Image: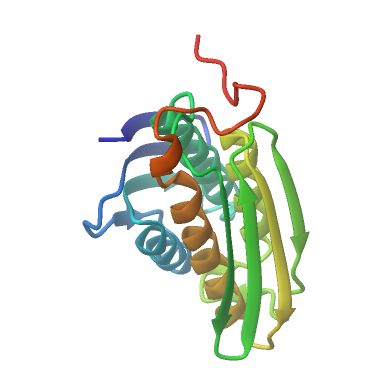
Length: 199
């Protein structure tokens, strides 16, 4: 089974995280930010990745360190679980509707970190979540995993729906990208023969 567990502790956050790919077991997520927990739960369900995430962060300051550091830890854990990338499909994309919102997420587990973000969020907060942190999460996740990630909002006026479409779309695209390509089950999905050097 493709899985990984890690602990990441700084003066700002203390994170314990484990994940298992190809696992429909419900995730257990407690970041201290209710709306962010909801988004990560949706993402994990769509990705078919069971995530156990527990974080104690400096929420008396704000949610920035918590959200960014979870992005870093999640990217690192997925990076380790995928190893040298042999057999994975590598690419994934999803155009996802959520009521008024329509969002496209496209990604490449390429080893090259890049975030293209084109999403104007109408509100500044949803519940206890500062919405600009969605981009910070995606940035941290892409850097830590070595992921080329594009997020584009086509329409929407309800910020909750837009963010839900983004996280569900990310989950769906990830599920495609990490799935095993039966035609190339033992092959690195690159004409170069290498996507990640294993030391």
